[in-house]
Length: 304
Image (cartoon, rainbow, N blue to C red):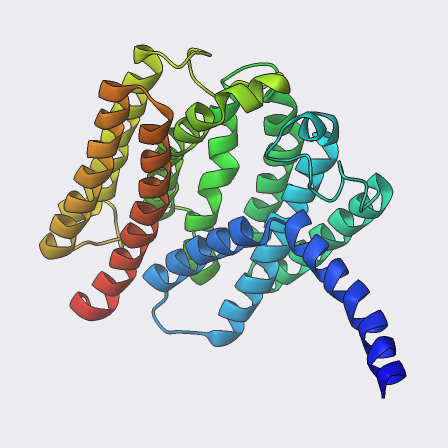
């Protein structure tokens, strides 16, 4: 009996490690949040719920985001090794070799493109563009200029609009609006992260803050981009965004959520400390999720 248990543990333990490293390599929590954005965009656009497309969007989306994250970690393996936040990741810690990680990334990319192509070619195209910009432009730029945040915001904003394109096969004002919401959201989100981890990032020669310093100018830009994000979130209530609509009630709710995020941005400007940056970072994650959820609920409750 004891021998059987030992044999069972001998098999299960390595499998747990493999799955754990895979999820860490693909940054599962981040990947799932991106998939959520895509699903929200799909549900906002869809005239009817097609569960086959939803399944393909989940699988294809996770593969594309996962492969982007792996390519990112391959390129940044040396900088990850010197940062406290990242030194225990599978590649810098030596648990997974670069060659194995590269093979997994390529495989996920191929699966992701094929799966998204089954939805429509435009979805596969934008998914491929997202990987290219994230891995080939944004990641190398991170050690060269704070403008990398602007470049990184492009692939970061694609998932929300990708869901719309998956449902409609159209790239119009609606998709651009969804893209813009998530695009402007990323600046306060990543600048808050850059403020929180400024010293750790400096070890690797990375600086995400717009002025490269934790100063009033960086904090002020965080406030301004939060305001831009709120304005774009409310744009659909005007009727100027085509089939993308928003009721007055939902616009009010999103406005309140935006004001909450703006409050934390202003707190960072006033207090200029790591704790304020952490609060803004956490608030930004919650606010985006709530905004996307309200857009979905608004369509199915108020626009039927």
